[in-house]
Amino acid sequence: MELEQILFKYFRYSSFRKGQKEVIQSVLNGHHTIAMLPTGTGKSLCYQLPGYLLPGKVMIVSPLLSLMQDQVEQMKAKGEKRAIALNSFLTHAQKQQVLANIQYYKFIFISPEMLNLNHILEKIKQLDISLFVVDEAHCISQWGFDFRPDYLKIGEVRKALGDPLTIALTATATNKVRN
Image 1 (cartoon, helix red, strand yellow):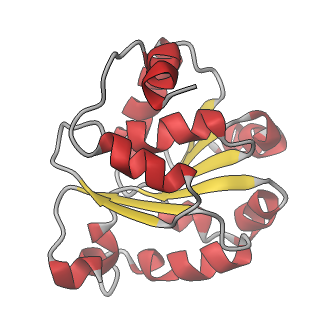
Image 2: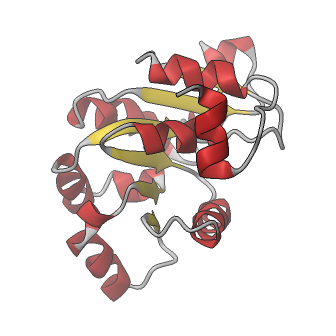
């Protein structure tokens, strides 16, 4: 099946926006990929579509809690019930419930801080992660050293998860930041 047919099947779009198909093809070919696409061009499609085709879970590391919630709600509105945001918006009881049922979810959105909690990382290690997504990847460089130090540990987390296929997405990154 061609990618355009798959795109239509899952998203009801007849064509890709500029850059999406190349990024998705790179991921599906098993290449770690960095994608710099302008705001509003559908970067989330670059991990969601491969996520439907890959057998395991999709772990999306995102710095913006409201963006995570919005993406989960959009996915649910389109019929995807296997999406969850694991972040500080959840109560302790809700977090425990999500962790107890984590194997049910296909798309798991998580903040870098939550991902670096030992009990959560141990639970995630038990999953088959087919795609590890770093959303707003420029934040690793821009925030990692002072404001959000947990970004600096993303490489360690990837290694602990067995170095799954990774895609880093951003709209704003200089050459230095991409390197």
